[in-house]
Amino acid sequence: MILKLLLIIGVISTVYFLFFKKKPTPGRREKETEEKPQAVSELVECTHCGVYIEIEETLLSGTKYYCSRECLNAKV
Image 1: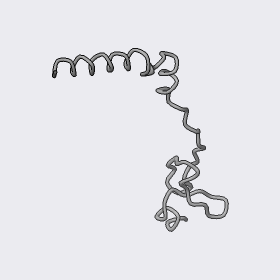
Image 2: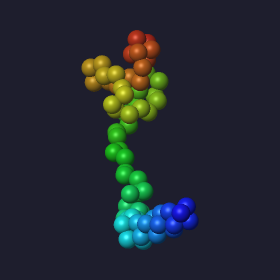
Image 3: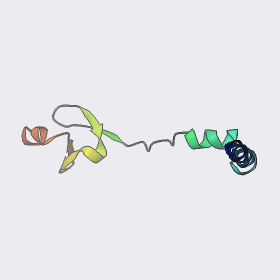
Image 4: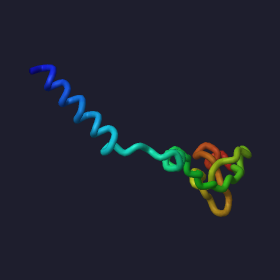
């Protein structure tokens, strides 16, 4: 009885894996693992210390860019 049950489960699982389970195609797999290019952001130089930093992370005072509040407060 148990042998028949195991045999039926084996046949059903074999049919499932052969016909119903989708296999990944090589071309599709490469596209999924391909990294998307990151957006290039502009770098600007801190007016006080000269460090280059992304423009989104800077502090703007007038027309000058600063990398931190310390540099902004220490401006000459």
